[in-house]
Image (cartoon, rainbow, N blue to C red; front, side, top):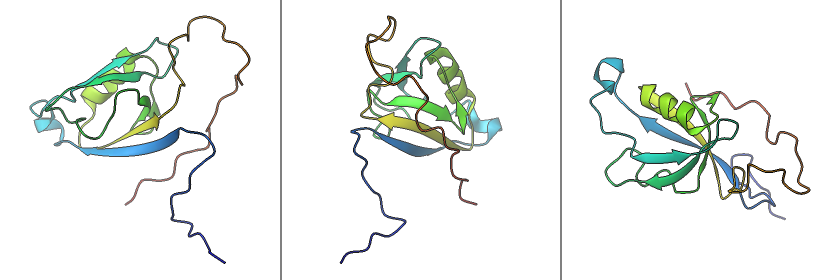
Amino acid sequence: GRQASDASCHTSSSSSKKLSIWFQRPAESECARVPRWGVRLTGAVDTHPRVSEVLPGGLAEGRLRAADTVLAVNGTPVWGHKAATEALRDACGLIEVEVLRGADLAGRGARGAGGGGAAGPAGTEPPPSPPP
């Protein structure tokens, strides 16, 4: 029989996957002069923001995708597009952006009381330690 390695990427039954995408920006003294992230975010203050557009020439080009849901920046959960924008703008050095790809977590009808889904928090286990 086949044995799966612990390091292998296994697919879940859900169509969404949680990804850690790493970016490198200069240290604080040079950070303000680097290219912009080039990403537009949407989302109310009580939802994780969603990428609405990835602009050419920005840091996010080719890495983040429209409809990605931004869960955290450097391990800190972000809620609403304003908080996420500030966290990304202020991040320097090695930056981890945790996203949910292919999900409908912060979908368009998020304002009203939705019908029948589970309301509990999903994926609340602590993140693994970053590599040394």
